[in-house]
Length: 328
Image (cartoon, rainbow, N blue to C red):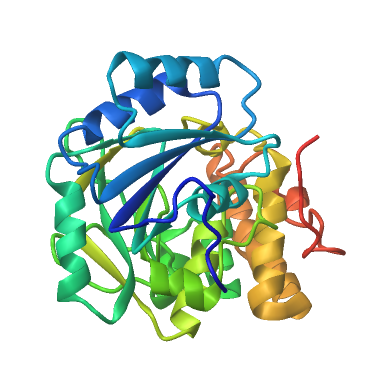
């Protein structure tokens, strides 16, 4: 699948950084400020895609670009609609021709030298098509950012949240503990990821049938199916503040009911890679694990460990799991 470039940029840059904004203009400005010393305007460019924020994001970002004289390396691309994470990043990729694309969340701060370290890794690991840095909190504490594939068995682990079940099914546990060594995870967080142009040309753009979540694992699985590797590069560090454009992670942490698009994306992922039966097995696996944990919680008089109505919401869109979901 060819990459479509905008009429005002037919040059082939070494790197294009795509930053997606949705009502987080100050975070975008802070992210851009962290890139000032790392971007060479002759060979590298930054595209900020505003996902139809409907607030003053466009004006605030334009003002920051002008006030800081960033015009030679930053462009703002307003979108007419908010199509979600994949759709917004696809707009940025299609807007500029580059040998490599760095997808970067607005709620990130790129540590000095991180971009160059990722670019060096391109030469070190020619078999890899996607490169992930170490994500960390502002104080340097690392975040888990590399994972195993979600599967019906991993759903039992998620439903149970019980050490016995987790140990029994350890090879299927999704999070991979943080390590200081480079390795090949099955998928990585797209809060920051470097993607070769050749990967996009071979497997296409991100699946915009996802509004948000599961789009990164989808793209990594498609890349692996095309024989590309995913490579974790811990020498490159990026601060990830988390939750800049949505409340899902905080909702899950506090066991509130998350937005429906989380479950719509989950259903799409399982139906796409495991089929309708796989989606049903994933739901039944989760319910089985949840039942074990619920019994222990009742007997031990403990607080529930799952989100509000999660047992119900995992069936969201299960009749039409591949139907794209768009929030009203």
